[in-house]
Length: 418
Image (cartoon, rainbow, N blue to C red; front, top):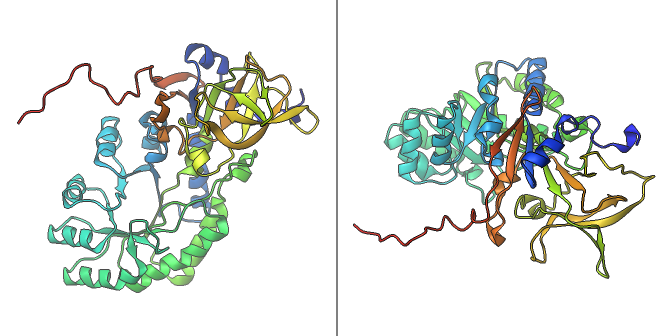
């Protein structure tokens, strides 16, 4: 096998003891790299420094794309915050020592707004009514989420910005921070085009705001193998941000917040599965049957996302694949009887030699995968493993047992009394 045949040669997963994980933890199992998380954060921070924005850029990675505190633990030492949506997330993360947060909760009750006001973290409210409540209760700070796409997403609409500015003025308050939702998975050109629009909102309506939250939406290319091609080009983006801020006269004290999710988390994870049978070929097509399920990471089918795949032999060595190797196009089947239980959409080339002793790796599953596990079909959640910077392996989520997904069924009925 030549280096060109090996897809994993330059990947962090090539240095992981997959045999150990397979033997001691079993499959399916999500595997995460602490080293890759540090590398991805470093890439963004270096780009900000190079553009002269290092002191003004603050990162807040959303919790929900990978809601495992063990995976995100390095953020505490890196000064990276967490974006929250729910009070339960806040309580869990406080238990694990996290203390740097922003909150973007969607539309919420007055009671929940008061909860976040007491917690004291910037909370991006999404309607004039919610902001009115915070103003009446004299909340310590006021931040808003603006839906620049005029979509169905929570957020102040562009047509409401003048009303919002008037509301703040009547209460003698200034906006602390404005967050602008601009969609997800955007290209570099898309994100650069949005910068001037955001600065215009700032200058026109809220020129005294202390910070601007550019939120997320920075694209990640799942179909690429090369790391440089997968990731968002922060170097060019921050340079464009710097130049536009200077040209439009954005004050130097205004901080810039970002909520990168896929770009930080996606390639920090891989899903290891076992192949259950030799390739099955029938009148409909060919199948690779695994012990996985679309229920483990439904976002792939939902978003029609084709993650890269590698097959391994019984010793966890990569099985060669490429233009000069014999292969068959096959769908990747899950373990259930459900007609549509395919882990990934479409067919994939399966190299000769894949059989019931083989394994399969699905790459770039660190975001929007394990955290979206569905209870349908009673598929128990997969185990999760973290590989630290020294190469040591740690179990961070136990595999669900056979009864794990039975809705927390009680052994006996319990009367409900006043």
